Image (cartoon, rainbow over all chains, first blue to last red; front, side, top):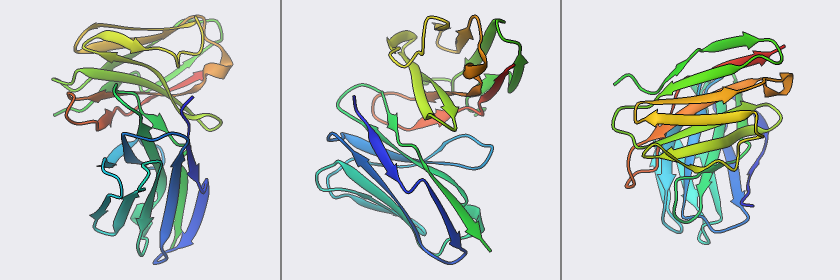
Length: 111
Length: 114
């Protein structure tokens, strides 16, 4: 079945350092979404990428969708303590509403 | 907008008991999803509905799990009988129409089966 692999599982950075999480699918995706879950909270939608090679920015966050629409990345520049949480990618293949979530990357920021 | 509402927020029950989790999606949303989150298995889709109709229940672990959506504003996930391995956080999420794919998650129900 469709799988979405996400790495790394865990990253601990010093405040001010950059952070990147990567997502890879075994099949071509129609779109990919990114969510953030704070400790003890619920996943919250960040962004959706649809086009091949698409790049979107939200302040210090940069999201990319690969040319083949099989991989994606989220990069955070100059992390802050408010960035802590788990970042999930979620891929959608074809029609329908089903999203397949990656395992998530846990980010801890040391101040 | 109140967002997705789930109840109860916490549930502790003994093995063998029936558990019913409830969800009220955002008004006007026509898709509803039930997820289960554990440390071992991450975030898993159990079942989703479009316009109150179950579309994909391939993620439902076994016959002990059942879900219903009797109307556009209410859904239940039932586990009967419950087992300790069902302990997890269960999230309900809803989504607005076919032009956007963003899912709005509820606060979750933390289930502990002893």
